[in-house]
Image 1 (cartoon, rainbow, N blue to C red):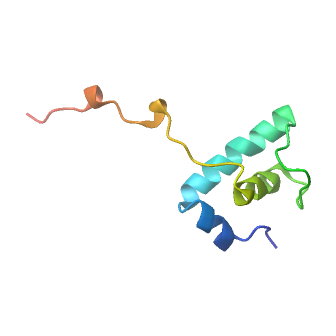
Image 2 (image 1 turned 120 degrees about the vertical axis):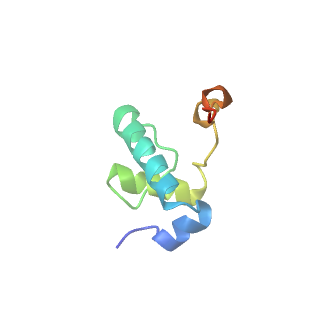
Length: 78
């Protein structure tokens, strides 16, 4: 059984796609850097640890300038 449950995670981040992206990025960071943000984890796996951090509110979504579309790249219709 997944801890925390998907229902609880969806209360924190309302998009499953964003949830997967954030968890995957954080899992890679945990694997490479081994820098835990919580004192203890239920899960032994990196993805589970990332999901626990999301549920605890340690990880959040923030828009960066790179994620925003560039208005100059929009094509005009002829």
